[in-house]
Image (tube, rainbow, N blue to C red; front, side, top):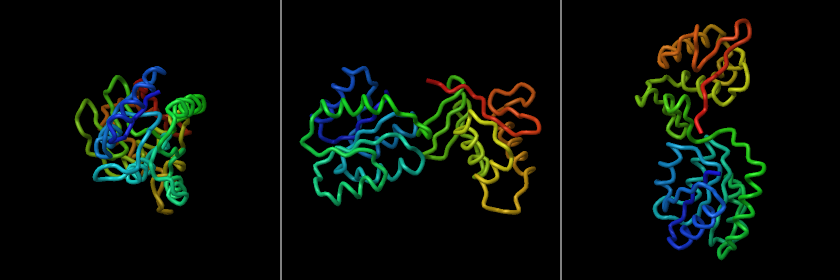
Length: 227
């Protein structure tokens, strides 16, 4: 699994990273929330292990930011032992909570359990077709051939919706329900968004690499997800 560690205590950070790598996990080490968010904006992770008491921004700020766009598994390891603190953090969206001092072996067991059942639906970074298309939900940004695309709010919303439901053929009505609360919206509006996206992605509808039309049914995202 790809694991992001967010811990400003150097010894603890190194200890967690060393054990995780010994279990063949790919580990990125960061020491503050800002650096963690930069990592999350540019690549996807399976698990985040974070402290709460960090310089400048706190671990709670990281959890809030991540939960706006992703259900990546979050393990908190903190010196805060108060019951109410733990409950508050779990309410924010943390999946697990360990108190310091902690057992590294217990953390490794938890990672094994996560690995068995993890099914990340909303990653923090997506790359398709060998990096040609990159999507960064934390920043609501999309690049194509390393150039930032100028997408409207609705174009971005349509794109992220069809990407996160790539196994499905989505009808115009389904897309409308997701991107708009306007009961007066009509299906041809979606056609216009798709047309604009294809133009910006240089995607030929007759030989699509990203958005496929299923005539009489709807649209489907078909880009190849990079490892």
